[in-house]
Figure (cartoon, rainbow, N blue to C red):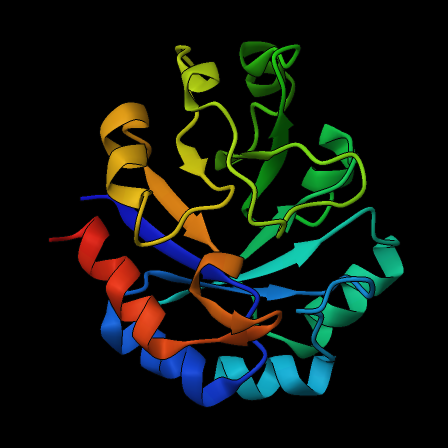
Length: 203
């Protein structure tokens, strides 16, 4: 069964509803330029509202280690998602399960990235945009994922209820990740869109 991560929550009530609708993981963005950025206080509220057995993911982009340490001291996270230009050592130093986001182009050597980040729990494959790190709503060429690696693949990049079933059929990922695809406005999750998305992943 394909796992479902929904990223970029800013509201505790909607995050809780998403889990009851079937989401396996909830992503919290700790990246100032993002419209989905949350403060530590809001992140604590969201995490406190979640029922058990939900993976709580913190997303960081080229963050200073002191910022990550501060978040980890205040917010009980299960997994870290590194969405910038972090090295394997940058990601592994916190001794918490992590996955590395890869913005895929035709030049991306996914096998090499998987070898470099062999300590990761998974690779998250996302659309490349030169101006931003994820959350663009853009889809990339899924045929570029056709490679054999040892790490689970989390597929992201412009996934919506309209295309996620096709994406799963083509890529057969371990999990899918959506953010802008289930929003009514930037940073505002829509529970009806979330339910539709989940129903397409698990018809």
